[in-house]
Length: 519
Image (cartoon, helix red, strand yellow):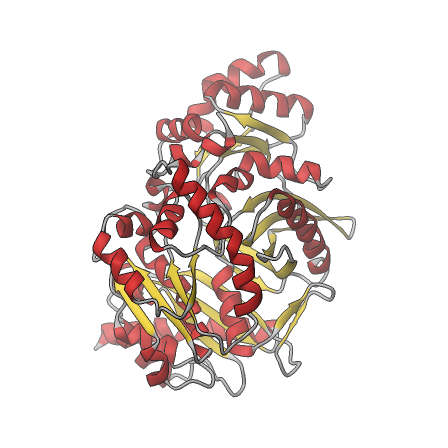
């Protein structure tokens, strides 16, 4: 199977006509001129259409609690309304409650709520189905016309979205505005297959393994050859090409494996029972079917006494400029320790600069293929004899879990990350750090409404303090009442303060819910 075919096999996407593809490419070719003239000017008249659609494998997405509320993560882009002539059109599957919108708008620096409201248009599909948001929009021609009518005629406009597929390309052509993101024809560059190939082209360490796997036989042979090549290897990872947040991974343990003579027969016999799939309730047969459809890789499980999961976030502008915009130490957990839960920013000072440099080398290679937009590169790092060794493991050619917290920090503090020093400073030169999570979740939080959250955090002094540029912000608030789940960003002057803010928030939420139960 060609890498370029992988997503078409996993998400119900449209087949773009040649005329549609040509029109899209012509729009994208004109985008650099718009970017150069409009983006640097905060007073320019412009409209950003925000499509926070997770156009990914719907069956794996369905395993994530409250996934429809992940569309709220890009509400951080409402901070663009701080530019007085900028309009924002925000699309969602379900309406976002006014109290959530007010919560974000009150964070705007230098702009009163009323003025921002006049330039914000929120539109909803009123659709809770498991289709992607972009598909829902395409199914509603009147909604598309409403979006077009909401863009002032004298405005430059573009689309900002979570990831770009053929669906987003079709929507862009129907709206007749470009996307600030990667051309869908280049999506194969973000597969697990091609990530490994890019790393090798860049001469960057990646775990031993095999690309271009498409069958159960390929998995078996790869597991066999890995163990033969590395006799001390205890585990291997099987990854779906289009997996995300670790949900497309499965771990195979070699524990109890026989001698080489009997190893192949043993793997064949035990694979279905031994392969531990990260995504909850995804059975072996379904995982294997997805593997056949989209392909994947098999690689060694990297382990060590001191092990971390850093990432580098990069940006390639429409003008071809390459920037390392942040580094993080990711927090992983959940089933088998592969699920992305949150992160510390910046990454460990012992290797943040090195991770950034590796990320930039990869970004420059991606630029040569024509990639633009935000993306991230994930690593596994182990410390051996007081030295760090880094393994690049995947490219996420889209916005990701670390996009929204960093954007929020930038918008709130007007600062920047310096990849030369691995540090972040506000506009006033003050250092800032954060800890964030998309998975602050407890059964005890179920039933807490957005109103309750605002009242509780206000009463306990947990809201972000603009004068101190420190405090707590929340996201995915809509998931709280039904799923007991919430996103949290804790910004502080030191890493210790960020963790203390998180601890205090959890303590307050636990206490308030407990008190409610007593009453």
